[in-house]
Image (cartoon, rainbow, N blue to C red; front, side, top):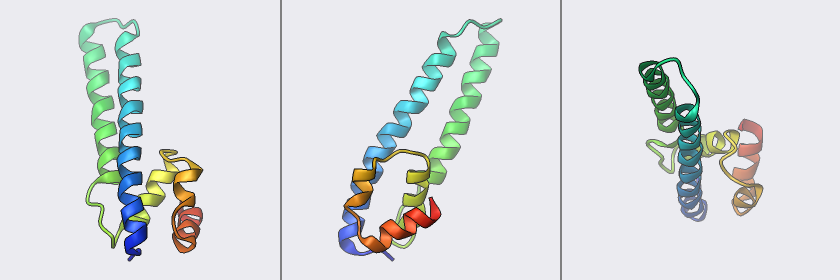
Length: 103
């Protein structure tokens, strides 16, 4: 389990990362909508599948975040490129080492 100080920082990192994740997902979906397609139905199905895949990734990375599993979630957030090195540098050395080894 991570320290209380790290937990407070992780919650802030999660919120920032979630916004970035959603921005990227919506940009990809906007791009898919803007592309020429043979049919509206085909485009709809493609966008639906994209949204479904993004939702699965979102759930894996962000759902059920607790102090007991925060290390894993944070490693996933970092591996997706959703945080800057500055965000991680404010965490304890132990947590930074875990992220570096597992992201």
